[in-house]
Amino acid sequence: MKSSHQAYLFGIGAIFLWSTVATAFKLALAHYTPLQLVFVAVITSIFALGAILIAQRKLPLIKQQFLERPWFYLQTGLLNPFLYYLVLFKAYDLLPAQQALSLNYTWAILLPLLSVPLLGQALRKSDITAALVAYCGVFFIATKGNITGVQFESMTGVALALTSTVLWSLYWIVNTKDKGDPVVSLLLSFLVGLPFIVVALLMTQSLPAWDLKALFAGVYVGLFEMGVTFVLWLVALKKAERTASISTLVFITPVMSIGFIAWILQESIEKSTYIGLGLIIFALVLQQILPKVGQWRTRKRISA
Image (cartoon, rainbow, N blue to C red; front, side, top):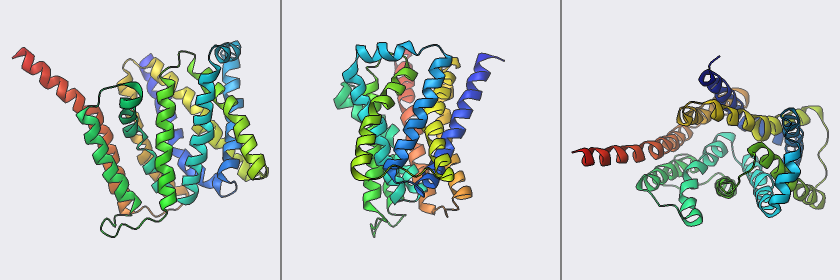
């Protein structure tokens, strides 16, 4: 099988699994508190990533990379998994899955905006345009289309969902300085973040009950949101002849997610969710297309 075909198989596999996790979050949160779910999912992910590194014979890299940059992994471990997933799961606990999913998906719009002050990157007109369109979608979803009345079902849930986008963007900005193996780095983040999760859990709540149905949901989240799917996506990008051709598959994720939410959770999907999510996806497309249009116009002027 050609490498490009393998890239699409791995990419589609990752997209399919990521599309199911919003539903899995809600199912797991019916049994666990957000913090308990983080605990179960992170432990699962640690075992999964550890097994992958054993198969790749990269286990010695764990000690090597950590000793080279312990402060770096302290930052990433606090951001992800500790803060990010705690905030995200709490947002899912307070909001319908369709709303939490759509609001969280705006991290890709926020990332280039935060890169301006934190990485010194230039602010492009396309980023501003995309942000305006995307956050119109956010407002539409958060108010359920009642723009004039401006009544939020859960203002706390909306605030947490949007905060999760800040934390996730900060995590990826910090990761731009990572020069190590990405799977090793992810495992180190989880290993460093786990003690904070355990301490917070023991101080505020009880350890999760080991009910089989609840455990299955938590393990599923750990495997297919945090661990295995990330590796599938890395393999897809590595095998792809053009990264952009694989990256565009991400646009399918929220659409498929909404389908799973309606089918499995039996949530009635609001018209405002379709409109708002459509605006967010349109903003992401604009973010990709507008710079290329600008480059094409520049080349055309130069050639003329």
